[in-house]
Image (cartoon, helix red, strand yellow):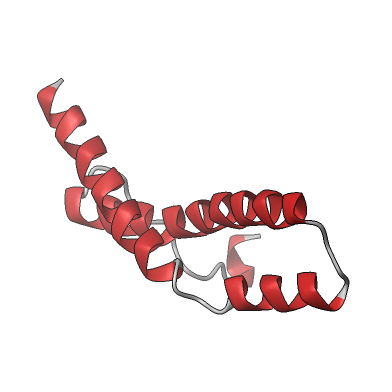
Length: 87
């Protein structure tokens, strides 16, 4: 059980690092420029910021999950390409 909790902790730590790196991307700037161009209300900026943060968390989980799986070796890697001979 402790091993599982350690792996989950490693995964969340990796997600945090990926997420923090993505928080400085240009999506925030594009969102602000779009809001100014279309005269969006203040509530729109709040909702767009939370939506963008959730989207960035979802995007950051994929590389984190791959790195965690590779480190633990508990799941076999899927082949990168499927050849026509397999069909």
